[in-house]
Image (cartoon, rainbow, N blue to C red; front, side):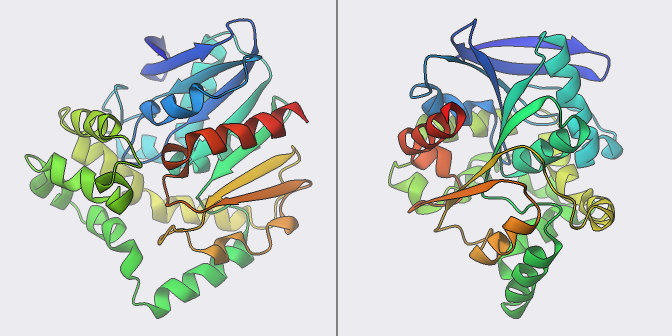
Length: 287
């Protein structure tokens, strides 16, 4: 994919783009600790009738490093993305999100449901699925909360800033686990995320995603049970140790139409199985 930057009222954002310039837009949002580079593999297998646009979220990739923590509320990050989409002249679109990008995608779908014609989310809780999320948290709490250690670490004021700088390669590479060590996730991708994490202030801006969570949860409690009206596909890597299967419980209660596709993959399912993920997206978008 090619890269470009767009300046909007809310800031300066990097994005990748590819596919059919005249095709129907597919907006893809990445998670942590990645960037829009995570969609490169999927882009190679996406149907030629689509135009792919993949922005870097605030504080990650090559987008601006804003030091105002309030701008990392997920509702605020969604406003960023709507401004970027508008600036690129996109009206209606299909929307895809993985990890934090999946949360931001849900917030975008709530903000402008009439424009999001179909939604794809991968390996992330559904913010309105209070029952499933509660059941998942009960399981994780019974394990002492161990899978969430990196979230607790980054929530501590100043700790990420002090300890990650100079250790970006060890920090970022750790989260790709065996799939990264064995090459199922390309080394060039991990190297790109390390490069971005070395950009000044990134340990802090990345940590803001987690420091905002208590405020995010307060908002999502008010949204409990709200249904997403657009057809939705949930793609799940079954080897994920953080987004455990209980998060998928009761999805039918919060979507008018939901399909679930499972792959034998880790959390970073779209990087480990890009061809399969693209095939699932193509089939869903073209149905």
